[in-house]
Image (cartoon, rainbow, N blue to C red; front, side, top):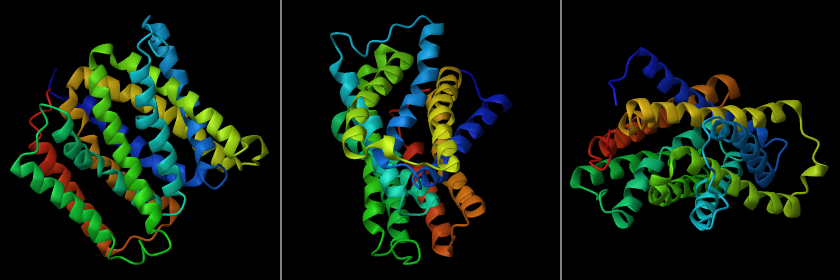
Length: 295
């Protein structure tokens, strides 16, 4: 792995920008699409560049091999469930709030890793970071303009979606020897399999009359925020390593707040700004003391 140059930093910024922009696009997509259908179309379009990459690099996709079960479980926990839960939550809360709540992933991931891995134990300083980060989230609950009795359930649903990302990440560690391209493509294909019947049965997407705005946002989520973003992430991982790539966690809530304020006219209060700084500080402490991450 090499030290990051200007191109690497620009790619990391681009990844943070793309993932930070996904939340206001989810919000717009929910105006016309139900959660299961939204998640389904998103993963269908995300699977296209992944399949093309595997074909180009002649990588064998093991999604339906005799060892298919881990891919199916990860596709359910790391893609299908969180994509759906985040769509449900974001439909009723500010898009930037969803981006900030998603920043709990490194912290919840550290807690789960302590119990389910050998190399990711919680240290004293890491526990301080986890507490600080969650205090930043808790501080938001005192801002009744942003979180109140009409939407707090959807806040919790979004946090649950973030937690499933952490669960999926822990499960993915067991397949790290199977290759990033294969694992990502295989799990994405399984998420399509899980979401398709649920969307058909419970939402009847053929009866939808979506707006052009919502459809464009959904296409963006699939092709750019999922498919292209994964390709950028893979490039960063292979050139600069995991530690550098994880720095994107600082950028996502910042870009999410900026997009929510300037493009969605969402209200930003002083408590939101303070909470954002506390959350980023918590992430920094956790990552600074995450001895399990290797370059």
